[in-house]
Length: 475
Image (cartoon, rainbow, N blue to C red):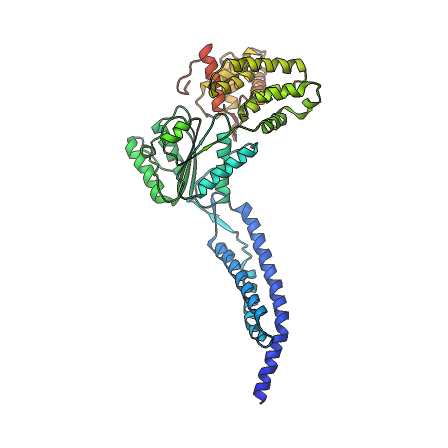
């Protein structure tokens, strides 16, 4: 009889302590989940493209998820128990409490959360702010294609609509937000593409060493082997493709393991020729979006000038929603507060547009407008001189200024320093008018480059009044 009474007393004790232990378990679980949130916040800054999560951290995070699920299940079983059977779960609650305490201790990770990932290849690229709801939708469409294993080749096309800017954001997002791919490679192809150069650029990204004696077929085999067997999944982004590319001849495998090939081009035909199974056209900005971008660059104070707003809106409409056109035209109008100058600019744009056929000519004429408004032959010649460099070439500012001086494009002054200062002032004028970009700041100083369409415009001008000889991007 005493034996049964002791059993009953023990069961009642378990019943009474169960609620207390449940509350204590809930408190400790909150502490564990709070620690998990802190670790995930640390990961957002520590988990860089060249790093990977420590295996122990990954297991710990998975275990926290498992513990949460098991405690939720236990809580459900206790809630469904009768008054007589509730006490039997006391031991389970204590076991879970001990497990939670152990994981809180294990979750300190004083030596960091990540380690170097030598297999991870990729480079974060400098980006500019993107404008327009349509642009955001395009980014998400491209992203969904990248996450879809059924889509292997993606073509992104359009003229002067920010393809490169969009894909730079995609490149950085791939490196930051997903470990789905071991390799994310960006290669600028440009109009002067050659198979040998494309193979060389790809090899440098993959750390494949060519001796220089290999034929194109051998080089293709070396690249194919590296991409097929060294890495599980890759994304290769080919920017500014002008003509059909044979991926087999380059050495890029068209695998079915979820790897991706993405190309940007001005031509829909290029997308078709290379067999893209998803083609995405980057649409121009809507009228209101183009106007907002124009105002952002030129300054909203122009709205305070009587009669100027409708003229400015008409100028914006002439840019046809092309971001590059809006940016360049707005930059050359910035700071002008005379209504007569704005009306004259609108007239110049209207006359230029009447003389063109096709979208490419229209874009070039928009850019030509900014060039014409430099109103200084020295400035214009310095700008055209930049087209001597290959497409997408990063030019050191100091070298370019010295070149201008040596070729007599900067007027002679009483000292070399004064001439150099004048050259730097010209450089800033071209940058402020968006005719030159500043893609990088290196240890050796600032570099500048020409947007491919701006370079096309410069070459178009030199064809009409040749001052420089440019062939295949070489001086």
